Image: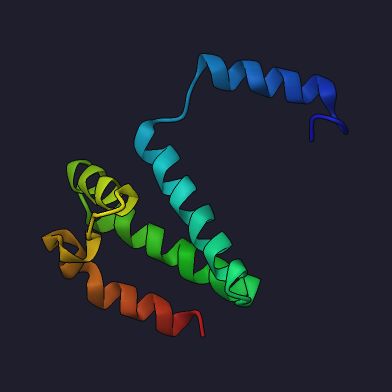
Amino acid sequence: IARRTPHASELLRGYLRDHPLAELAKNREDERIGCVKEGMNKRQDYDRMLTLCSCTMNVVDQDMTPQEQKEFFRAAASPHGDPGALPQFRRITPKLVACAKASR
């Protein structure tokens, strides 16, 4: 983008520097993109992964409190973390299963 539209890119860079994304919003988007990348590395269909990962992050966003999300993202980022053991993850598991079914 910076090569094609250097002026717009510079304006956007300045805007984001002055108005950073909220931590949770940034984490959610990073997780969604990471989820899609992981699927691509495993040779999964892009559209399927985008659907699955977007649905998953929507469930996390809608069904976990901000504090639960922070705890979840910390556990997911830790080499020894187990986000699946968290009560909030167990609570949303049925909806995550529905996301997986809907993305097939």
